Structures are given as C-alpha cells and as structure tokens.
Length: 123
Image 1 (tube, rainbow, N blue to C red):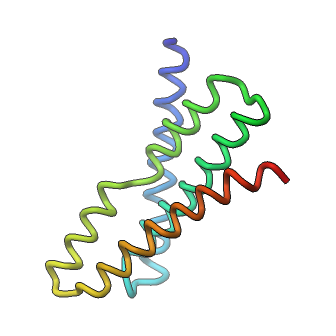
Image 2 (image 1 turned 90 degrees about the horizontal axis):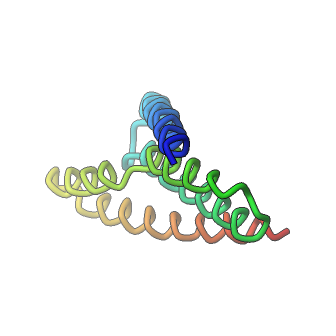
Image 3 (image 1 turned 135 degrees about the horizontal axis):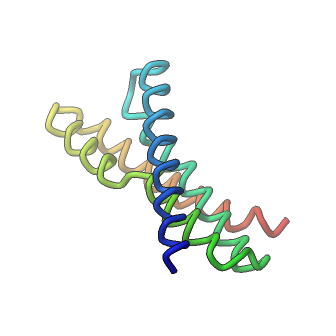
C-alpha cells in the first residue's frame, strides 16, 4: 500500500510538470482564441486515461499501474479547476461566445478522446 501511494505521488509530480511545461509551450506558441494549452492537456489526458483503463480491463495490466498512471499521472496532468477558472475568466471579460466554445469543445472532445482511448486498444 505505501509503495503504491508513493508511486502515485511520484507519477503526479511528473504529470504536473508535464502539464505546466506543455501549457507554457502552447501559450508561448499560440496565444489566441481560447486557452488552447489547457484544452490540449485535458483532451490528451482524457485519451490517455481511456486507453489506460481499456488496457487494464481487457489486457490485464498490473493492478497497481492503473491507479499510479491514472490517478497519479493523468489526475495531475489534466486540470478541471483551471478549465473552470478559464471559463469564468473568459465570461467575465465579456467573451461569452469564446467561453461557450471553449466549454462545449472541451467537454465534447474530452469525452470523444476518452472513448477513442477505450476503443483503440481493442484493435
């Protein structure tokens, strides 16, 4: 139990650093329509978690790998709180259309990415 707990923490540290790095890179390269860094992070994280869960359920990954990579890495990599803040921030700035586009596309693409991750491992 303690080894799994420590491994989840280590994976979370890697996920948080990956999220920060990717977000900073995307913000630098493409400031624009809406917070693209958070959007890409949440979509790729949804795909990774779907793939991981699918592989775990159908191909017998080691039992501890799913919580370590899923809760640890993916949990720290993706960010619902930043997504929520950015939605509110866009609305407060009077960018209601961008806020709606960001929210709707994030939810839709995230669900599709998770479903794709679950489906792709069966090929």
